Image 1 (cartoon, one colour):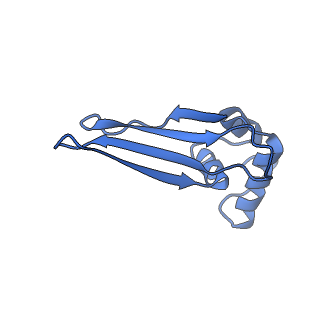
Image 2: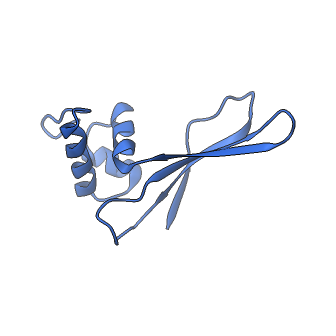
Image 3: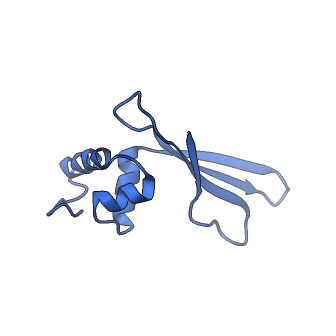
Amino acid sequence: MIRLEATEAIDPSELGAKFETSFQKIRTTPNPEWIRIWHFKTETDGQVTYGCQEISFDGKVLQLIEAGLETASDIVEEIGCAKSTVSKAAKRLEAKKLIEIRNRHY
């Protein structure tokens, strides 16, 4: 199952779309698949260009923490995965000194 959701809007003066895809309900690996952010843009000459940026699961968790989500429960509600998966990602981020964990808050 693939989840598709809108991301932040692109510049209103540009014609295009930006969205995020992620795999849901993956049971074959301990780490979730990478998340991809897709960009489609109509250029002034009418040609459509596109790009894809890959973000690791840990990167997505960090992005959500930076956006103000403070607990594993908050992040689980946003991305829909197991709480233990988010907690493990947070511990890896803490080990890299990218976040601090205090009383289960990031």
